[in-house]
Length: 247
Image 1 (cartoon, rainbow, N blue to C red):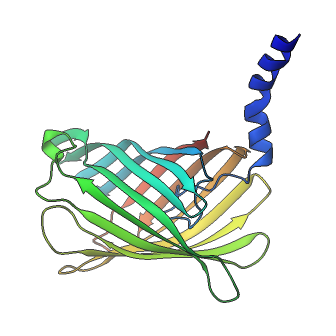
Image 2: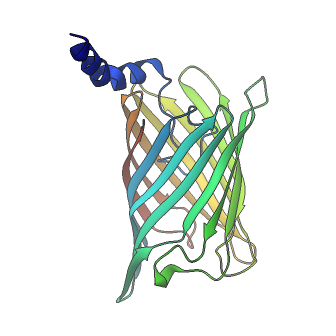
Image 3: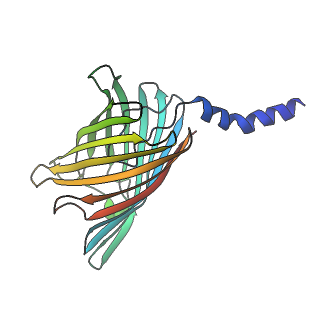
């Protein structure tokens, strides 16, 4: 009898955890990262496939990109990013693993009045931890401050500011994102977003996207998103689909 009870508890434990923890918060599908930290002792995976057309001669896909996260404590999480790329430019094709990124997210402040919920994210790439065609000359850091305001029970406003390097030069590319999230139901969420990249010595490109998320349970979420370029130097459009889960 004791053995039966033990097996039963093992089988229902994922359900109990899903019901007692807060709903999962992921950094996908939008470009705006969330300030939320993965709960202590939990492992979270966020993965998806992106199909992007840059122009009539060029396209690139990520098949897939995966963000691996582990909650060290309520203020700190460890992060690892892996991404498999497939690119076509005119008649030339190449594919492989881009440099792996390792990093962390740390909580800075909880939301209080006009002060947003704020965290800081930093990563650095490992130049040689990639397929031959995608290896870089230097370590490439990236960072961003991520902020979020609660506007109502159903709506939030989030934004990121940061910079990244490509591993080939010392010139940074500055990043901005601005998104409004709206909860249609307890399980169905939506967002619209404006984001862009501003290289130090080139013109900035600006983009618009929107998407939806569906919460299967507190530990598993599906997502679908699509975006278009606003400026001429931005990609034409992209479509992404993915899911996130934690254990």
